[in-house]
Length: 199
Image (tube, rainbow, N blue to C red; front, top):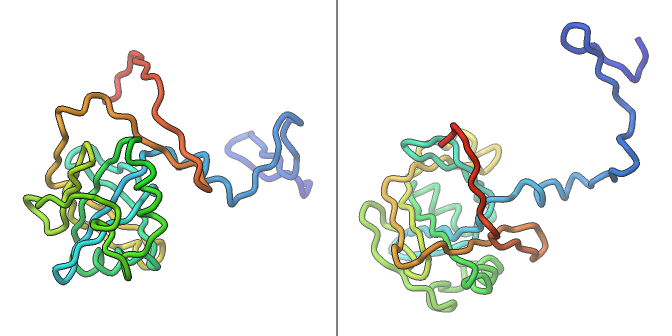
């Protein structure tokens, strides 16, 4: 067998070591996330020892419809990590594009030394089922409890269950922001509706 081929399934042969069409250029692996990180940038609130904090988060994905389960990565370097590990609860708050400058500032600041709610003019509101606060300026807030930490040690990945969800009915079709790396964001655009059997 040639070094450039490997056995595939059945009669198929996978060819390796070849380059795609010249219209394609090789992408540095460090830039892959900029293409897949398409979910809205959110704010994550935590609370520990009576002190609340907020961080910016864009690494998250749905993993179940009902009950709603969300997988997210919170770095062990983040101040929020310790509170999430200790208290097992948080709030995911979804900001609209108007809050984009604040969202970036929150993400560039550590809660270890700064009271971010006060510094950036965010309004905490009491949640119903968890200690971390909702954010009044965000059009949706999801109260969450941590239900799976089996991948925290390896990947800093938490699985959250949304136990209470809130949305502001006055905010019609708010635009969210999507991170493409290095301060570049895409704003929600035109919505299209296609026939689909999926929810």
